[in-house]
Length: 75
Image 1 (cartoon, rainbow, N blue to C red):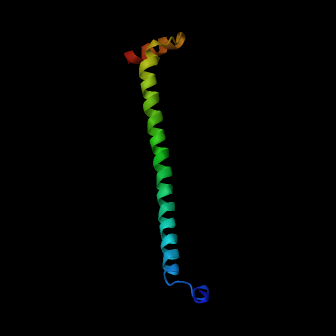
Image 2 (cartoon, rainbow, N blue to C red):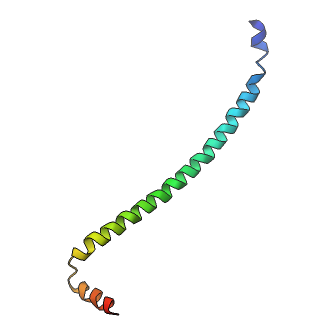
C-alpha cells in the first residue's frame, strides 16, 4: 500500500487532461446554448406580438388617431 502512495497511477494525468478537455467543450456548448436561447426568446416574443396585434388591434378604439390610420390606408 505504501507504494501506491508515492507512485500515482499512470492513468491519472490522462484522466485529468480528458476532464479538462471535456470541460472546455462543455463551456463552449453552454455559450452556444445561451445564444440560441436568446434568439429563440426573441422569435417567440415577435410571434406573440404579431398574434396580439392581428387579434386585438382591429377591435381597439383609437379616437382621433383612427382617422390618420384610415387616411394612410387610402394612400
